[in-house]
Length: 293
Length: 299
Image (cartoon, rainbow over all chains, first blue to last red; front, side, top):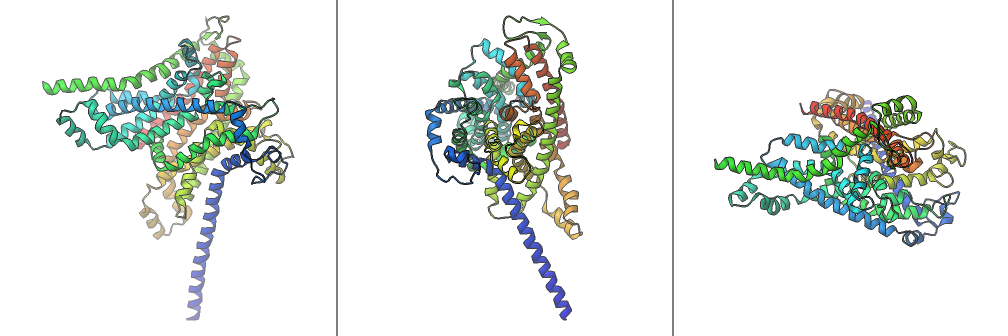
């Protein structure tokens, strides 16, 4: 009896210890993942709030002792950072609108309309997503220069539309395919033209898909560096990533890290918020893009 | 008859609808690509002082035989790709398994994992460059205190460590995203499989190698090739962290030097185009493997 009881006691204790150990391990691992993902952004925020004396202190602290917003003010006073933000908004915004229009037209035709060579059209569009940007950089520069598009918004928007179209078309095509067909058929019987059906019925029904793909397009255009760095050669046309990559102080040896971190926080904070709000849609959209094509 | 007419009309509408997309990608992607292939057979610059001269395959021969900088860039690119993709896959799998466990605030943690992905590479590279700063960088300070490096050791300025720092940034940015992709595959594995295995007395390791890994193989394969395509054309992080100095130059960084920096002062544009073609070919090989593996998955 007693022996039996002790054995059972040991067994339950073993189970509890195991469970506690599991929980401790799991919590540690989760904290590690969180710190890993957030720390660089956290450090940028902290650094941007530190005055220069603290920033270059040989014993850096994890919290600003006397926080200041002077770096945030200087970013706009000492350099045209608001112009860079404006350029990025225009370029990424217009790119998103055009890509959504072209992509939803193409996606709808491929998903719904009678057309030979659909698979080939989709394959052609998708193949562009595999192109390394560097392989077309030189030729594209020469073409844009011939058109007089270097240092213009359209000179950056056109390439961005081309590189964001594949994923947009693919995701929207999948989305349209999943919409119930009978609504469109009813509209057709009522004498609604194809285009009217598209604008008055299909697009409103697809609003969630359009928002998610639009967000992905906007982020892709907002983040792009290589084309922007090559096709925009005057500081007043720099987009945000180029301005931040080429951030310079008064001399070569004096990099204004506080200002640089302030600029980084200003432009990433809205992105971080957007991503946190739309996380589910982004994950499903991206896995559709990555896993299927 | 009427039916047929309606169908033809629909086809016409369909072609008009795909036309804008096809037009843009033809002008911006396909035409420049053909032009790059063509230009790779010539010697010329972007400055009228260096006119076009047909040289056949000489640019390619030069690249492979007389250009140590190209060979170094090729080696660096392969090293970067192999190490970063391997680390990202292994850590991504580990993190996916961790965040698949039930715990409090799981949704919030998964959302936080999107942050590194959402920050533009140009900006996160600068954030990391600050953390690696040899005078006041937090990582430098921590490594100094741990006795790993000498005080003031320039991590980004030394050939032995700079590439590892660049890989760290890429792994930081991409691993959480990789984990989310693998997590999506993980959630498709039916729970009954694990229960059955548990009843049969399989331990954690056996359940992982006999159920999780085989069921995830296609997801991992696709994510892996997808990442390889990206890593082979890496530009932003290398350019911003080191400008390709201290033996970190990758193919894309060297290619831009040829096409933009040198093409105006010498006959380098054709040579650069040949390098562009090589990068395209390298990536196409992996793209074909990618498409093949997708087809396998569909069967």
